Image (cartoon, rainbow, N blue to C red; front, side):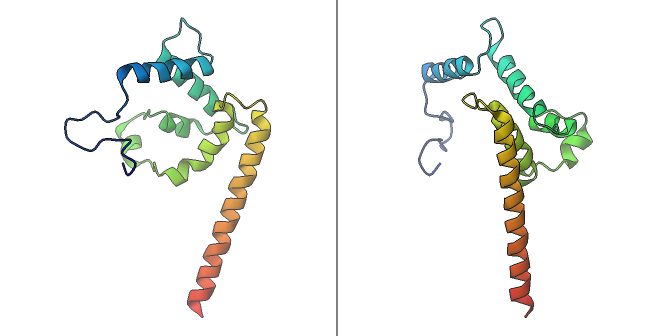
Length: 137
């Protein structure tokens, strides 16, 4: 919104792109995702995303996969499931190498991503300890 890429005025289009521009973006994404021409575009994107969520080893929990795809089994799951991005960040990081069409070695990228996540968690724990030590003395 700060860069005026998304409109905030009433009755204005959410994005300032023309319909033909959006169609072009989707055609390019479909080609890059290597979706077969006989497959409906949105179905193809959802299938590619689902495959990416199922590919990491160990696999992402099926209930979290459903949540990441916007599917909930019942009202309780929808209302009481934590959808905070920080909670889902490790799962997204594990799936991303399988979504990136330029990545020729998704398993290695996943390993690096796992190491980065561990390092981030370690730094966060050390910062919390330092904060606790500085504020208790």
